[in-house]
Amino acid sequence: MTSKIRQPLPEFRDEAEERRFWETHDSADYIEWSKAERVRLPNLKPSTTSISLRLPVSLLEQIKIAANKRGMPYQSLIKAWLSEKVDIR
Image (cartoon, rainbow, N blue to C red):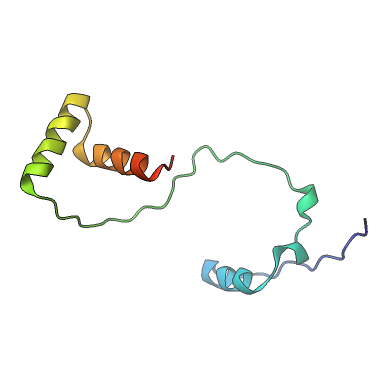
């Protein structure tokens, strides 16, 4: 197997510049992936965004009752149900 000469990584001013760079470049030209090591990032939290969701009052009341029975905030219960429905974890 021949070893390809890797290019040095450029310095980026900010994350946006780096993002634009990687959209148009192949990381294999810069990184020797066969030597990469797996890492764990246990404290990494997924990015979130707020949304506005209109629900019928009766539905929201039923959700709040179900959340109360489980001892959790109704927003958390909604997120859990949505995650189960789209099968993400």
